[in-house]
Image (cartoon, rainbow, N blue to C red; front, side, top):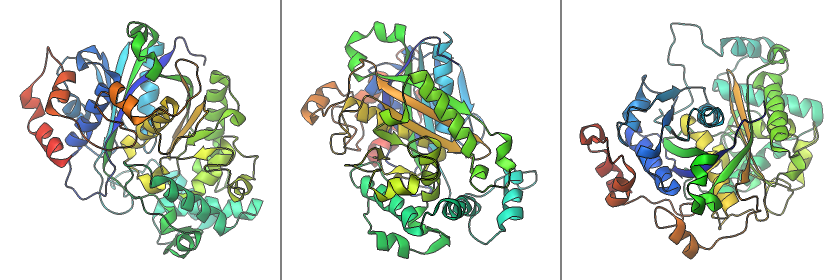
Length: 456
């Protein structure tokens, strides 16, 4: 459906992603990310008229617990859970509000405090929402002792090998590239670089996937401020940093999900549909994309997604990988952030972290890993169960990006440094400047601000 009015990303912020150790609570993760986004947008929480909280693991109304730390302004606050696509679902909801004239400024905050190890079901006394998917996998490919998600995506990788001639080395190369990209991202959970041989030689999880081809569980937060054209017009000095949501589609599964194909079982068709719709809205083609963030929960899924997004000809994504066309010097840079494989995957924050990276890319602020000359950025965020959000971004001023030096960014940035290349915090005075002036509660904040300051 064509957009009724433009929606823009005015501010972004995120925490460093970290191993789940139970040391940092979701209240801190959400507070840090939200304050950074408000500072980046140069707005006060009193300017926000809708809130969206994104998380998968937590009790109902965790969103209110996080948002009340910014202020208690009585605005609607929505709590969103859509598996791994939760963060982008929140962005989609915010865009819908802005497009429909229901809001001029929406704060979206994603956060996740996870447990160690692979994902586990929390409600074992009822039918799992992915139970039919699991039963189809069992009937068609069998079941092993490997984590369920690794089996599903690994099986899709096996089918890709059987149908199109990809090799185990191709999947490993995807992981190698993501790990290499992550060394320049200060927010990445892992920043180690590996050779192809090391990726292939890592412990096998579910062939062709070795451990270094699987994303970790993570704690982390990310946030964004989404605004209307009218809101931006009143602040013309900020148009240069704003990013237009030029096209976006959220889609769910089609009957092909259960056609016995391991590839289709991973939501391939909904990604194809969402990509076509988002690009049509934005008036772009796959060939226009030079930078993208995709949902590489496993290297096999990145391979599938290159096909589904149209970045590769159907069945030839592995050839794109072999040519070096997914990294710097190639046709498109995929996951300059390091992707889920290396940056980490706190479910509720992931989609918003992808958005943060692409915002910094289009602004020219990601100057240690910049993909220069970009006019278009593409994002893909998928959750089994299922939902996918594909988004096309452009600069609000219509220009292509170019490198911006740190000394210039320091003057423009709400935090006083370049947040794209340095993962630092903020001062008490800075946080105070964006918390509600009219309706704040220190009781709601408790000691969270002090904990964040001490940690950073």
